[in-house]
Length: 298
View 1 (tube, helix red, strand yellow):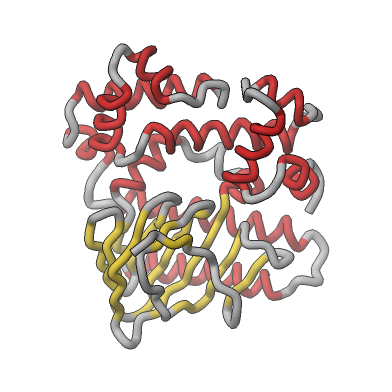
View 2 (cartoon, rainbow, N blue to C red):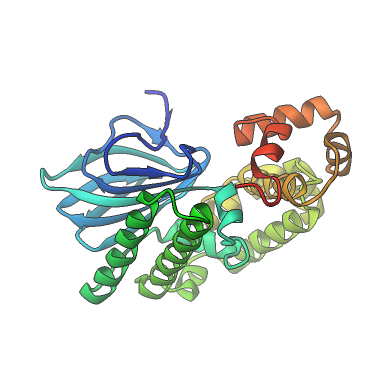
């Protein structure tokens, strides 16, 4: 069975800003999908409020019960969904673009995301769950009042606060500490993965070939790929694309550089190839992205 792209639904109890899929909140969601599914452009936080669900997530079986919090990250595959008849949850979908809008990028780093990738579920106590649910329902209430001034800013501020609270709970409540996670992999593998991530970050989107990074690290591309899968469960190409898209988004949103200047700065062979890369990863052309997310635009 082929892997299908998982996208946020439309319908009752589903809230969006101006109809776009970049930030979607689902107040109640009890129907699980079928097949082998992958998020391509979103992250997804699931907060179980009732019943039980089970599915396989990147080869690991996940069970969700009441008050469980789960982070579904982009490019991870989920399948074999099952749920009790009374299962219900709340969901928060967010694109990478909305992480910029909510200022989440300045509060999280890739090592945090790697840790959360390896520890995607935590169980909250009643007090934590009640507080989180109250925050979630407040966001839903605010999102329904679309006529207030500064609507989008208010929604993004509340959504960003909710996401930071969720991330804080996932860090503090995880049964596996960050130190334990580090100790579970070999020191050499962890050091190599850390150095690779550092080099990719420093390249700022200008180096996109796995073999170039492997050469800088004095290893083969195959060995680098194996070590990254063992230590952070990600492919080198995923990390490279992550930082490349960050670099592109920043230039499109916060500079006046032309498409040709950005393509040249990031060492794309041609502006046409740059445009195809952006379209593939962001779902729109560079100019469409700039017009939609230019500084000061809702």
